[in-house]
Image 1 (cartoon, helix red, strand yellow):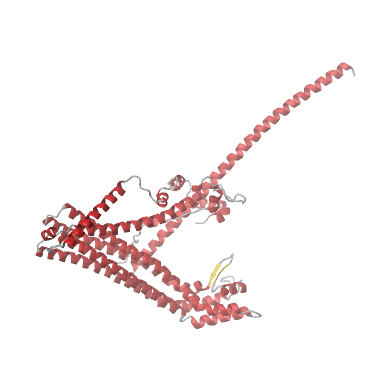
Image 2 (image 1 turned 90 degrees about the vertical axis):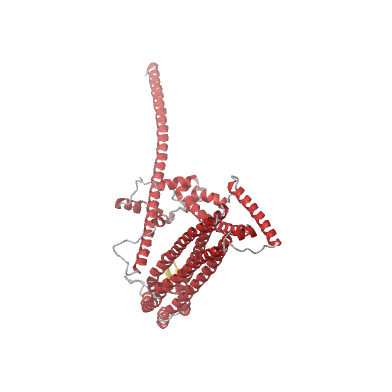
Amino acid sequence: MTVAAITTKIVELSQARSAARSKKDEAKGRKENYTNELEELKMLEEEILAREWSACVLGRNKYTTSSIQAGFAFGLQDLARDDAQEDDENFDPSEEPETDAYVASSLPVFCVSSQGYQKLQGHLEGEQVASRFSNLADTGVPALQQHARKIGADQMLADEEAFMNDARRLLTSLRLWSTCTEEAAASYFRDADAEDAVSVIDELVQDIKNRFQTTCTSIQGVVDNRIFRILPIASNTAGDRAMITVERWGKSPKDPVEPGLYYGTFKAVCRRDGTYTNPRRAYNFGEDLLKPLMQKVDVHWNSVFDTALKGRFTNALRDCAEKLENFKGSFRNILKTRCASEDTKTMFEDQSVRFVKSLHRISKDAGKVIDMEQKEANRLFEECIEVAMKSAYRACAEECGTGAYARMKAEMRQHVQGNRDTMFLQAADRVRTELEAMLTKVETTIQEEVDELCSGFRQDCLNFISSNSREFTELEESCQKDILAALDEVDTDFCSLTTSKDINLDPTLQQAFQPDEEVAMAAQEMNRPETPLGTSEEQMMFFEEEMEPLEDDFSD
């Protein structure tokens, strides 16, 4: 080869290498672009999957919420239907009973993800949590917190309103007394007119007392007829089926129809006085024995305490309001004929409003006591059965050795067989005693509070029409002036408080009634009618298949 040929070949190879290097650089540049585009596409995919995941979760939560609320409304309708059937003469099965649709639809239901909330808050960093929530509101926890705060705030406001109502009623009564001078008292009415007015007042007071007494008697009658009457029947039914329940416990654990308990499970339940929970399920011997009794009692129990008693208080308040309106018309005419001042008329109207609100407060307090104590009474069923079964539980727990399981089942059968005719009746008697004590307590409290309220209202009305012309002592006149001056100061203080814009509201109340922006936006999103997620069979199958991994992450 010549030098020229070699040189030419070297130049060609150098040019080829330069071209290859250029192509390599171009390929690297394209690879980097493709890599960046791929990263962007992956991020976009993650964002789309997160939105899809969030939409599925929110859709499932919305469906769950509406389903639970619909079930609650159906339960209310069921209770109303049972209540309507008590009136045999007026019951029409073709008519659906009226229920409070607002109450049914406003049942607070929350689907929350505590793990998703904690992850967005910066916790659970070292744990694998299947959560793609983009904001705290979607987890449902802020809405639940808001509801919990509002419950406390509502109770605080109710207590404060009751206090303010009683305080204003007291202050008005004091003002009436302090402004009743000798000249004013002597110029109100002639004796005959005063006697007629007093009879009108006494008639109203007696009517209201009688109406609440009738209500208490009616409540006692409802409980007697719907609960006390059914207790012996339900107790006998539970006694008849007790042995069937015990035999079911002792069946083979491999029974295809009604599997029994393994030896270890049976003994664990007995060691814990009839209640035991393992990863598979919860066991409660007392609840099993009481099931036939509670099936008969629960329907009447819920109907009475959730519907019937509240309806009687509502009717009593409505009747009292009507009686008071009639009385106010008569009393206004009396004040008008005697040319009463506008301040007197205003004070009378104000006291009438406070009187009605106080009646509502008395009824509400009585309802709270009934609701709380009837739940405690209902729990006594299981407590009494636990006490009656304690000796059997102890004997079974102490068995050991060969044939221990057979002896345990025999001792359990023998104990239940010997006590089934008495232990359910004793539990029913205990519950009846507690309910009777509760009703007596409520009736006594209502009568005392209504008597005190009516006495105060009667005295206020008498101050409007007082014809007492006796001479006031110097001390009484001085006391009246001092009290009137103090009342004027109180009015000034309250006026400045209600008109001030710089009122320091309790932080709990501020937080309760000013929801977070994210919570409000999430609530608005959840309530949109044009949601693309329905309840068709295909969509429900999608929820069941796609959302299965989230079962442990959410609770309704």
